[in-house]
Image 1 (cartoon, one colour):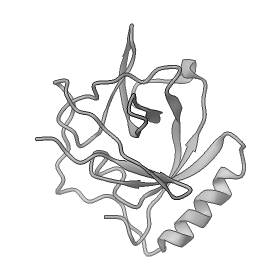
Image 2 (cartoon, helix red, strand yellow; image 1 turned 135 degrees about the vertical axis):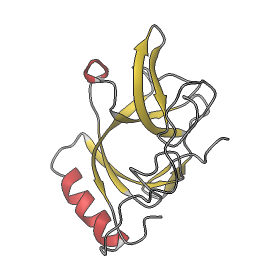
Image 3 (cartoon, helix red, strand yellow; image 1 turned 45 degrees about the vertical axis):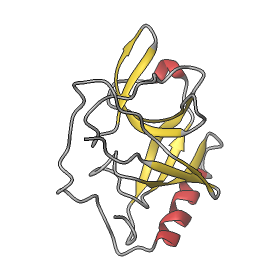
Length: 150
């Protein structure tokens, strides 16, 4: 069963995430809810923006979808950090732009000759596409739960 993709919103532009086709990806039960707090989404966004402004290589996004549950639920506010491709390691949560122009936020599994394999934590299979030097956008630097997280 394919899970919904994790979506990020950058300055009002929505990006869908996730492709699932390869076997052996971890599956996490959706019965575990993502973290929530009593902070509003607006306050979480302001806090994330304050963190992002500390480094010009950071930017803020809002997530949606189910592929990264239970770590990140819909409406989680994330700060992404641009990093060199050579610094990537298995387990990092990364954002990349797939061939269709869609931004995907998933976890790195392992590197092979074509690039890094990635998977949504709640997806049954790895993404078809690889994270490469040319499509990497950044890694998750910080996450801000809020009252709107689903």
